Image 1 (cartoon, rainbow, N blue to C red):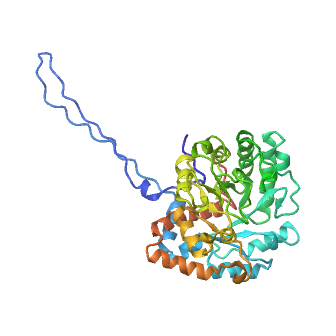
Image 2: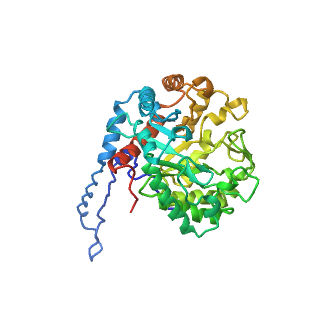
Image 3: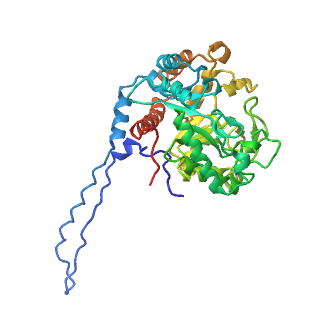
Length: 404
């Protein structure tokens, strides 16, 4: 499979600094009498091409070098706070330093323009927009109520092109509301009508789902950033990860032949983000995929994804009933170690209700980096990717333009 870039312009700067040398050597010629002539002069090596680093990459590197450990870690957090007051949300973002915010139903009141006004308060640094996410799948999961376009339940019975049309209109609505990242494209597959996610999938078999996932991504291209969820496939289990830790015994080979396909199609179409589900596929790892380095390697190395790896709401792990994941700091450390770029927290206004205080979480993560529990290089890799994404949003008036 050819290497696909999920986000335009993402590159590892160190790799760009390695010159490619093209060498040549002359062979000895032989005279008619059979004696060897003097060795030919060596052919000079071709000049190494000058590595090019884009202005965006230079800016990202400069910003990264100037950041403290706390600022880097805060950049990796996508938080939530209830309310519609732009000033209050502005203070929240300024106080936490979070790199992102997820708009939920309790941030929505009035018109789309009202929501855009609320979202405008999330901007703290005029030179660098935050990631602003929203769950706008259509159908049952629609934060913006005026979205009357077809959701998955209708689109899976329509030709694939209908998904492109629907998600192009949906993306325009999301952007008008002030968000730039839609957590909207379900790449899960299930034919089980009892699955909690059955009404949200775009197909009951991998091929049909893949066709529609691909078209949904193409519909959103150049309007908002697209997210595929819930990797590696929530349709593998009927359990609800909001209240449990679902598990599947599917083999990796069977996963590759089936549930992987819609994710592959969406990545090939240019999806910029993949959301990891809190579900266990024990044939690969006993840890939830969201906390699994093995599943992150599969996403990067086998599916060739270079975009943003995002967790589902981290509070779900605490609410799963599994005591192994009762400690929010331990979960966050494991999530970063696994390879996530964005840790998502749908917080209540009162930290006692959420069980997570952003300040305490950040302090614990800083200590983990300083003590060597989290390699700072692992953090830098994610922050560089996030900075490039946010710079791209800024430079292209709200989103990264469609490739090609």
